[in-house]
Length: 211
Image (cartoon, rainbow, N blue to C red; front, side, top):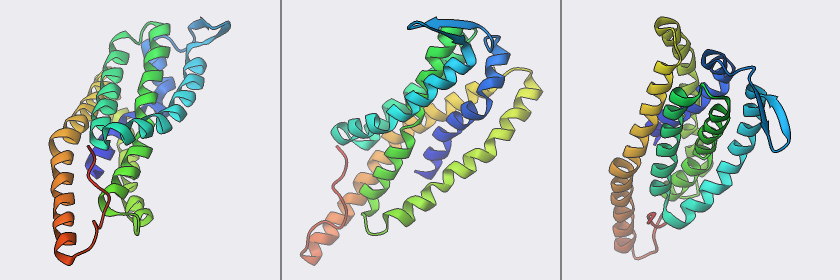
């Protein structure tokens, strides 16, 4: 889960830290956008929309995961973010597409803070949930250390496209791991706990496995 957390949060942190530089690199930073009766430059418009989308994503994907399972929701959200980043690097030169795609990236990024905390509690129970998630949340600090590496890579290649491609690849790897690695691992974990609880003649020691 920590490796997946690092992979998915890196792209969002990169966007938060470097969205202005990326917009300048794509040539849309000062481009005017008129939408819903509001006219603003592309960058401040995107920053305003991104904050809204980032806030919506947390309860939205938390709600979805309660119905279809944590791992399936992770797969959908991480794939969505990866595709959004790829499309941003390809179509972000258009101001409207830059606005839409940056919002798409932030919508699919904010959910990490609800999905990983819920998955941690599902897996290890609630008794030590705060302590365990505190350790897991260190992934954000590790991901933050990768942001300066993005700057170095941009300077070496002369474009943010390479950085965005790498971030998108990390998201898609995390999406694959959610289904192919995390889901079977958690099923085995819950099965062992259920077997242990049955042997001890009491109820399950952790929450039931996700669908």
